[in-house]
Length: 73
Image (cartoon, rainbow, N blue to C red; front, side, top):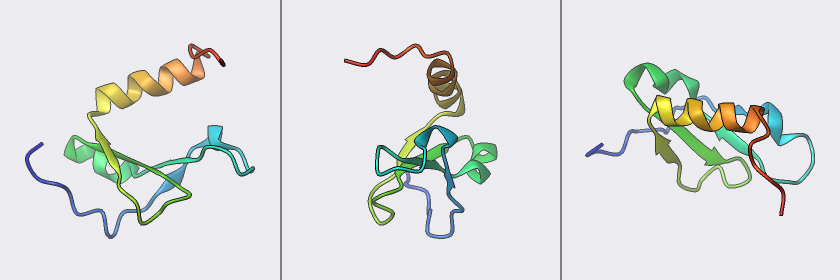
């Protein structure tokens, strides 16, 4: 993607896997999927940068999380 999308009016949704504690929290902006991108950010740093993924890459990541494919070290 050659230009950075304007996310100033994005409606962010917190991941259900983030829990309610002070741990790692991820938010995403689902309204942008129809534009071919999935913006993701750290909910603890709402003014910080967002990572931009292709929908297929984001779907693969979510499926891996749901399948418990990541091992805790």
